[in-house]
Length: 584
Ligand code: ZN
Ligand code: ZN
Image (cartoon, rainbow, N blue to C red):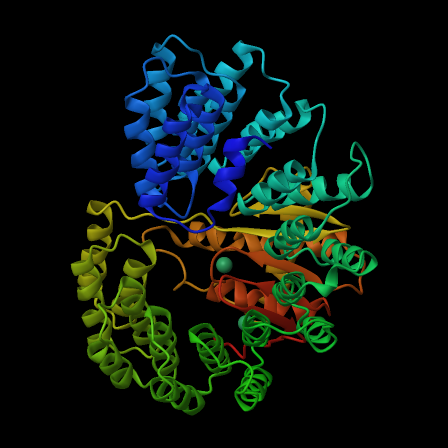
């Protein structure tokens, strides 16, 4: 270790005055003339977290007096900016450097890319990638790892995969960056493929660690991929990674999101490490999502009784309120909501949303309205949408109009809001109002979110969009749907007309409903899976009323258990009934 480093090491906590001291010392001893010592000092000032922004400013001030700064001096300043609250400034300094006599090196590029990663600067990272290739540093492991990280963070996963494949030497951090990037970037399937490649040892001498399994578990949760999830958990136990509480929390979350709340609870009870607040919250939410309000509240009470260890926070209360909501437990919910205030836990928009939903569904629209009016924060569109939804269910035209007016004031362009209001008018046979709402939709550029569903089949994940014809077996799938439609019509089923827009003809409306992604997935499941196994489906939006009716009938007709996880909860269809008791 050099002399300057040894001086710098002595300072564990310091302010600007210490920087002055070190600077004077270097000047007096003549060390400042040696560029190695000087750049070390600059780097120390610019990047030390203890001195923060003042340190960077000091480094810049010193830099400006240098006659002919060297590459390492520039690097110190660029690195300082990359780590600062304004990483974009690194780009300006890089530009200035490229016009100066000395040239950027591999470290400069790496600091520049770190700035890109923090600023999510996609274009700049592409430009730097080109620079790296031109400069012949393309095979530098540090640069490749940084590039991979940047692409993963910016969501450019194709580039990330490309860089990964081109790497001659890969370390664990690169593997982990890509798996986490894919899992977070809505490409969970590829994340899992990579994880398997890693565990099977193909092209990797590294074994997955805690960080890797977290990425893989998150991918399984998103996909609702039970078999894959089990495989990851087996691996975790084999490698004894379950001593880590964060890993355990992720396993509980994965099982809950895959609809196996019993297994999640098994992991919760058997944990060998100390449970954290997140552990409790995840488990309570798991029961809530599964619609088991009683188990969720039991656990909540167990936690409250353990008060000397962990006190429930806002997330715990939200999970407990959700449990009441999905279980239709209005009084319990009201009690919890009051308890929050007494325990001094701050309420946020989601707590209010949950309460409005709970009261609204129970038909206590007035109380729901009062809550929105009395809350100390400005209600968002979701709250009014919730009230609108509840008013629609209970046919309360006045309240529906009230909520819609607020939504218009806020400037909502969500398709669902308009459809709901038009449905209330239609139910009251106020056709001119229906027409007015429909016209408003056209002028306001109302947007629809495309619906899609995942289904796991023999270890592979298949995705369907509404009206999808891209699957190689689509003809069989559509034939199966025809068969289902024919059979359930014999049972007296009429396609729900409330659930699609009124401005398409009767026949088309019937078709639009028939090809919702979850119905396609159910048909695919019926064709492809052996008779005993449960069909597990994962849907990005709330399941529509028509699909709900149809899947209930299918579960009876074909004697199959079907589980649909939608945006808000699980629906477990069996013998013609759903676990949500038509309450969702
Ligand atoms: Zn549907
Ligand atoms: Zn249901």
